[in-house]
Amino acid sequence: MKNKCIKLILIFTLISCYVFSGCTSLSFNNKNQSTVANNVTRESNQKLMMNTIKSLAANNRTFGSDNEKKAYEYIENKIQSYGYKTQTQTFSFYNHTSDNKLQLKSSQNLIVIKRSKANYNKEAVIICAHYDCSENSVGANDNASGVSVVMETARLLKNVPSNYELRFIFFGGEELGGVGSNHYIKNLSSNDKKNIKAVINIDSIAQKGGSKPYIFTISGKKNFAVTLLERKPKDMNIKKTDREFSDYVAFDANKIPALCIGQAYDKNLKINSPQDTISLIDESKLKLVADTVINSLSN
Image 1 (cartoon, one colour):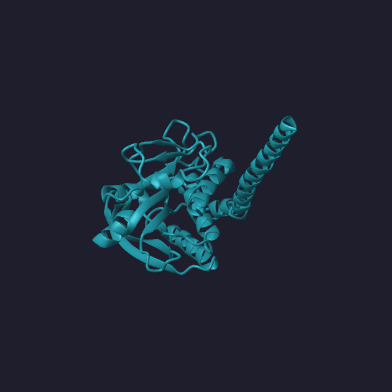
Image 2 (spheres, rainbow, N blue to C red):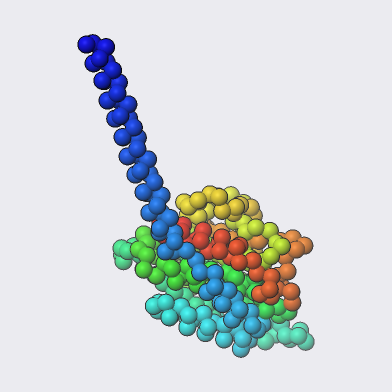
């Protein structure tokens, strides 16, 4: 009888372990399924991003040119079609002409603000890219690719509640040394600067034959902006190193945690050249960066 009781207890224990471990596993799987479902609904649309690159890279977009202004208007119209209100920040800068004379030209930053789910919370995360390009290029990778990712991020996060205020900013004049981003930050108050918790700058991310996209910080060290991107899967093949250029530099100089996602400078990178056309865009790299940013900010 005693042995029989012991057997019954053992059987009951084994059944219980199976049932409860099964429930735990099922709960875990359900959680994963929910995450996958969310990722599907927030998965970037490669066709939309490629269409953006095609439209922007149809012409050269040098600082202060008519084509730069047309690119700005294209981005503005698209962003407004997603249901956002936009702000324009105009600035001027002396630029050298082909005969080495100084000429005053103007450009503009496009600013889009998505309020946090708690409207009183002014802490912000900036997602940004420049839309101008160098004189001898149509700038498909540098930087229509970055613009397309910021636009797609704004589109997919339009109705997703966020703990932070999200600011999607499209800078002009980056090729002249970050003129647009420097103008933006110079017009912020001390409190405004303190409220910016992270800057995610996207610049030249998707050329075929170039390196995989990396995460760059000025110091080469991790900061809060990097932490935001590490909330989601770590198999994105995005690495951290230092790269001291692009619009994130102005924010870092003001002690704001900032990073730049981009490809490493090497002999294969065709930015600032006539070869930087849409035919060199690697859609898989474009999607990798877009999904990383979108899913990081979705949570």
